[in-house]
Image (cartoon, rainbow, N blue to C red; front, top):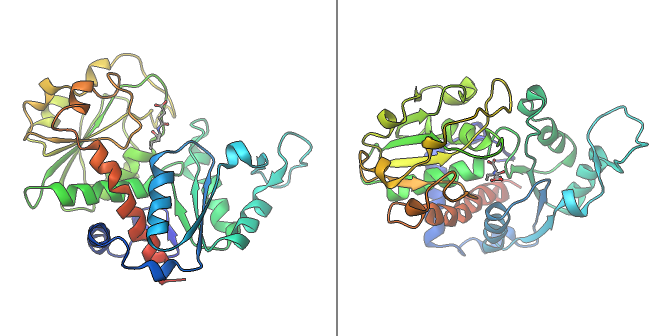
Length: 315
Ligand code: SN0
């Protein structure tokens, strides 16, 4: 694997999930692979889980890791071509990405969407410039439209904890106070549509995701109906795709509560985190027996390690 930006870069999803679960049993079996190899993690936005789990995964494989919070510690990056750089930006992404490629063997990049210009975000302008100029294999640490390491960890978690061959998985929209990216739900949908699960998406009218990511899913604006008999519930807020980046007032009653779990198959509740308690997800669920959010976050290590292992084998 030379690029991990979406489910489309994975040739065998089942094998990758199995690999992650195997690495969980035996984390240090492949330390030789990363000997004298360096991973660079470049963040244009905040991170807790992605940063720590990917770093842990790399060290389990014997790699060295460098982290650059380029939004805070780097020179202000210019992304546009053909401009006179007489303003606030100091360094062009052409040089910055190419130079990083001189220091590391694999790069991970986090680049959130601006949520202003849909074409720019959905064409992955920033992430694609890293692909173009860095010259080494690249991993998405959440781009404008996807969060594939999260989705892989989510699928690993479902595989690990399911109690029937084909569980019912429901992605439910959650309330928030600000517009959030569609990256996590897009990506989760894209992976679930290719997994051995019965997949439903539910959201208030107006929050339809881009259809490219949801083909094959059952989609409904009736949350109660969607949650019936669910085995796994994936909670996430996102802003509208159309009109792009907008949020609509109301819908506070979409927050998941213990009452709403009653009609499910004692569903396990997932969230990629960070989660705002009692706004997106009730504390009673987060602190109760149905929540698997911390276990899910733990599995981020094995997802990242499976991807890094495949890349190292290919260097
Ligand atoms: C990000 C998102 O894509 O929704 C990262 C999730 C892994 N989440 C946020 O930006 C949350 C910000 C907030 O204020 O709650």
